[in-house]
Image (cartoon, rainbow, N blue to C red; front, side):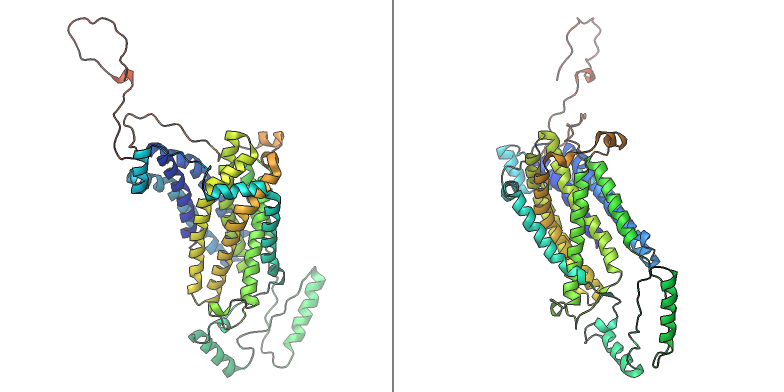
Length: 465
């Protein structure tokens, strides 16, 4: 499902750029080259960020997550490579049919239509963000914070068949075992403590030893020290920050992206806690009652959501960076960049939301928790953070968005994601235009040969085509 989601995102981003170029009169092959040279670069860095976020699970030290991290990473990388190689080949194969018949007819009748942000609902929305950037930033931030508030009472645990629907065979077997073998058979008592040193560990061992001698206790297992997930959160955020700094040559943009991405993850965990711990809407999901959020889900959710959030950040800011390089005006760059990418980002997010909501069709609680958390995060991230909060903050930051110390700029390698549209390539056989016809072949003067003649020829000027 993750591969399906990012694959749709990457393909939609590249195909949209290709279609816009074709509508503007660019030959098919040149349009595909331009799309890969611009949007394809954004897809490359977005895919690398998702891979970094997923592989960050290795820092946790839980071996059962390693297989999922490797499988998801391989899927994302393979999808990214297919978007950069197979997709442009398919675009060349289908040619002008990448546009609808209505669009092709309009181009033939009215001429090329340049890709512009000067009209449409997204232009009006981006202008409203520009005019009221401070107010819109505060409102968007308040929405995200309110949604994330339940995360402070998040209760983690291990789900079992006791949270399955009462009509399921697994729940009926769970209840039969509890009645046959007594209370506690299906839910052993767990003792948890915060240990700050060897003295605390020794004291906790004495508590466990005392519990083993209590009436009704059948067996006690040895205590285990759980690894901390803080290392994974350090690693993922820092590596994503470094990659975004290399791509956009800025310190403000990666810092802003890291903070808002963490807010999106917090909002997702807050929604999960409200639905599964507090029971808000649990009946609509077919749950028999409140269920704790699976103990390892926040770690996986953080990796996946941080990567997907960075996807949308790269898509948005890469186009804003193009406009900044073209105009040198931060407000115009943010407004035009948002207007040009708002439609594709929300369309891709809507598809992702539908993919994740399909998880709710499964009666297993863990799968439902995945679906609710991921769908809620994408809703918050795409429709609040990327369309309101980030553009508003970039308006407020002004030219500081693109600030990078000169000494640091000299040290860092240049990984440009904001390459302008490439000029048409010189080919002996031109590509097809939007109408599907091939234009006349024009050869350079030096390639035209005169027929051989026995009589001496007077020296003349070279032919021109």
